[in-house]
Each structure stands twice: as C-alpha cells, then as structure tokens.
Length: 418
Ligand code: AMP
Ligand code: GLY
Image 1 (cartoon, rainbow, N blue to C red):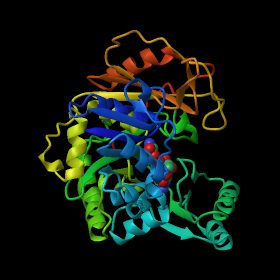
Image 2: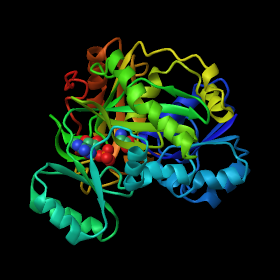
Image 3: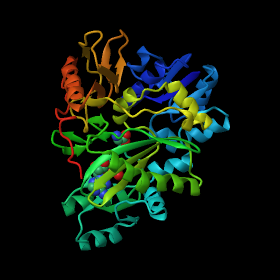
Image 4: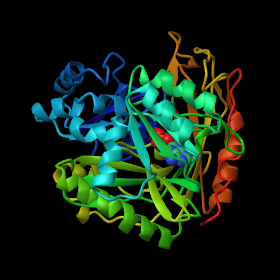
C-alpha cells in the first residue's frame, strides 16, 4: 500500500511513524511534512494540502493508494470531495460533514436537533443584539467565533469589556456563538468511523492552557495524556450512550456519515458529559499519545476504515499510559522567531520515549532548526501515568534551542473524578 499523509505537525509525524511500522506499507509520503517525517518517509514540500489540484497530481505521480488527512483546513475546503471524484481512497469527511468542525453554529444546531447534551447557546450575527444580550444576562458565558480559528477563537472571561471587544471584532467577519460557561473537566474522545460501524479509542486529555496550573492563554495544546485516570469505565459507558450513540445516529439520519475520525471535545460536568465541540480529524497533541498505545497495524486499520470492515479488527484496551509534553518556541502562542538551531541530545535506544517533530525543518546544510510555534512533542510511555511522565520529562531538557519552553505539570496535574 502506498500512502500519502497530508499535514506537517507532530500529529502527522506520529501518524507517519505508526504507518512506517505497518507491514502493509510499500511507500510513504507526507505533504508537506517536517524534518521528523523526512527521516521515515518522503516529504513532498511543494504540495499544499489545501490545493486539491496539487494533491491529486501527487497521487498520480507517486501512485498513491490511500490519502490520510491530518489537519482541518483541507477537510473544510473539500479535499475529500475532490479525491473521491478521482476515485482515490481517502480517510476524512467530505466538506458537508466537515462543517461539524468548520462551523460551530452548524455543530450547535446539529446537537440541538439530535438532543445531544451540550451547553445552552445562542448564535448572533448582529452586534447591537449581542450587546443587549450580554449586558442583560446574569450568567457567565463563553464566546466562540463560529469558523475555524486554530484554537484561538474562544474567549472565556468574566470581564464584560473584554467580551464586548472580542464580540465586536469577531462579528465583523463571522457569526458568534454565545454559550453558558460549563464547570468540570475536559476529555477528548476519538471515534473511528468506517461508514457503517465505529470504534471508540481510549480517552485522551489535552492541556490547552499555555502555563502550569492551567493558567494563561489558550494554545493549540501544550501536552496530553492517554488514557485519562478520571475517565472511569462507568463514565466511558455514559459517554457512549449519552453522547456518542446519538451523535452517530444523528450523522446517519442527516446524511453526514463519513469514513474517518470523529473527535468529541467533552466537558464532564456534575450533570454528565456535554459536548464542547466536534472535530472531524485526530487531535494534536492527543494523537502523539494515542497512537503509540494502539497495538494495531496502521495499514490494516486504514484499510478497514476505507472498506467498511472496522468491526472485524481486534481492538485491545490500552494497558500502558502515555504522556506527551509539547516544547514551544519563545513567545508562543503569541509571536515567535523561526529558524532557531536545534540540538537533540537523545541517547540511542531511549526506552519508553518517542520524539515527534512539529514545526521543524532542515537548513540548506542539513542542520535542524525550528519553523513555528509548537516545535516538538516528547512522549513518555510507562506502566502508569507516573512512570510515563518521568520518562517524558527525562528527555524534554535534551531537546535544546534558544528560549525553548514547556509546561512542567503534564500528567501531574490531573482532574478529580466527578
Ligand atoms: P472549543 O473550541 O469549543 O472546544 O473551545 C476551546 C476551549 O475553550 C475548550 O477546550 C474549553 O477549554 C473552553 N470552553 C469552550 N466552551 C466552553 C464552555 N461552554 N464552558 C467552559 N469552557 C469552555
Ligand atoms: N487538541 C486540540 C485539537 O487538535 O484541536
């Protein structure tokens, strides 16, 4: 099987790594890829994932049998529809289903229509109407830009002036969803869908805030764990019956079913699990901790999704735990320099650890340098969360570049079960 992966983050490095271990793979390409994927696959740096023309051309040139799409932008712009028209097997939703992620207004009405537990909400298109609402509501609220925003379109604040400023700015370009603020802890649930059946993967948690103690601004994710100790078997059962089942049935009823990954961002509240958001792809940095725990051949898994035979694959529950620590450039999630020289001082055969590159590249002499905000995810794998976290943090300081920083509490700061 000749596989092309679209994207260039640590999620795509983890996907590439998992595919590279498959017995089914004869050639592996990543477009555009990063310095890490370049070590285990062929990078196609000139192929833009959002250009259907360039991706289809690459599939023809490299005789690709299957395309796996990492990030949301190409999905929202219809890359799957374009590939399907060319009869190229692909894992990911068509644009119609990708609206579940690309439009929070669409996702919220889907949840209401299908009675899926979620925060109460209203969608606004006009500022004066929204201002009247915000000034009169006694409730604490969260504001969300409806469209894609790379994790930066949500404001949780008790400061009314800040809320109004954010709302005015957002409404100039998009709809705004206002939600009641939910208390609880978050978990990310990934569901593989093959068009007729589905498979739920072990629960993950993403540490979204920039700084230790869950302080500071939201980021794309500064760390992750899998599985999550506070997501017990009985809570997983509730998530399945109260959230996943009605979601899958709703997708079916509304003609939105697809072959790919459904990601449910949940808040576990006192009243039970509620959906904060849907995404239609794997998460970053969750993928980096999830895939190493799946004892399944990625080629077989991809084939099962495409052919609709997921139910025939054996899925064992994860016996180990993985902790992933993101190493970021100075200034992230604000502005940051690129091109910082990187030194990786990692002894060969480091047991129980993996390093996934995110924004990295090689300079013309072949030296490794940074190329963005989130630069690496270091993953530790162990028999429990303590061992996994110790293993990750043993290696983190060995990834060196000027101003490199990371959270110190990934896998240590854990939510209390509800
Ligand atoms: P979203 O893109 O909708 O997942 O929102 C991004 C982040 O904002 C979430 O992961 C939560 O940390 C926070 N958030 C979103 N909606 C709510 C809510 N209704 N109540 C509390 N926090 C929220
Ligand atoms: N982990 C958050 C995301 O992938 O959107």
